[in-house]
Length: 263
Ligand SMILES: NC(=O)c1ccc[n+]([C@@H]2O[C@H](COP(=O)([O-])OP(=O)(O)OC[C@H]3O[C@@H](n4cnc5c(N)ncnc54)[C@H](O)[C@@H]3O)[C@@H](O)[C@H]2O)c1
Image (cartoon, rainbow, N blue to C red; front, top):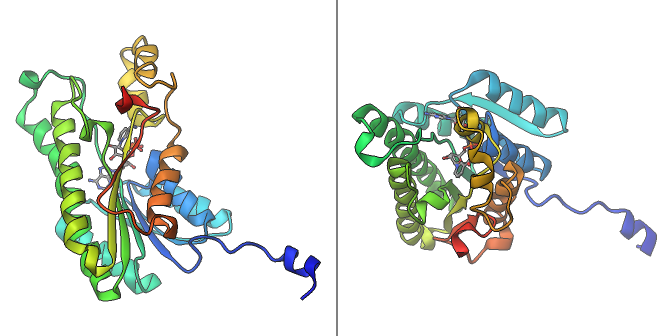
């Protein structure tokens, strides 16, 4: 082969031949990750409770030349999560990479001001939803003999978060699920890690600033970079953890926080 024809060969895409499942993929970090997996060559299962946003994400992947399937799911319901995994496997044959990212935030409240309904809503989506997704993904990955899982925790899974006690508890629980499952399934060739974002420019942030625009600078400045993260910056970390480049990384909580937890 002469040198010029070798140079003309395109580099293989890092997730070519892989199937990636992303929950919470209708918007924000999940959409950015679904698009990134699609660009990197994966067949993407776009999963979310929101139908319009989910179809829109899948359409964007296809417009960019990728492959995508949207599946509506409420991650708090075991039968729906099991059906999601079945559908993904019947459509694409397997699930190589799962990014369990669906989550809900808490309005700013001191711990003693919260109510039961708020507690149940946050724990249901952030903890039970993540646990259910891991459970059915791991069952499938055990059959395949391999797989990677990344969960979206938060800096609030690593340190306290005043006015977000229940959210912080839920994200500490995600870290607990991640570490324990990583140890349980390492010898089954399944790697399990978390990303722990600082404040990211998504609808969650927009809602948080809606009634209190003056918080913007204060919130930016808790990050040594003095800015918020872009959703794609968190997505990139999730893709790296899902990739062969991270082959000896499991049970890790990767802070994507502009240095917030360094100080
Ligand atoms: N935005 C931030 O500053 C920030 C910081 C740290 C962690 N996070 C975490 O990142 C993840 C993504 O959040 P985002 O900021 O992109 O917000 P987002 O609201 O844009 O995305 C969350 C997605 O989850 C979906 N979802 C919610 N409940 C669901 C359910 N029961 N079943 C299925 N889908 C459901 C929503 O429809 C939405 O598409 C969440 O887990 C969140 O806690 C966000």
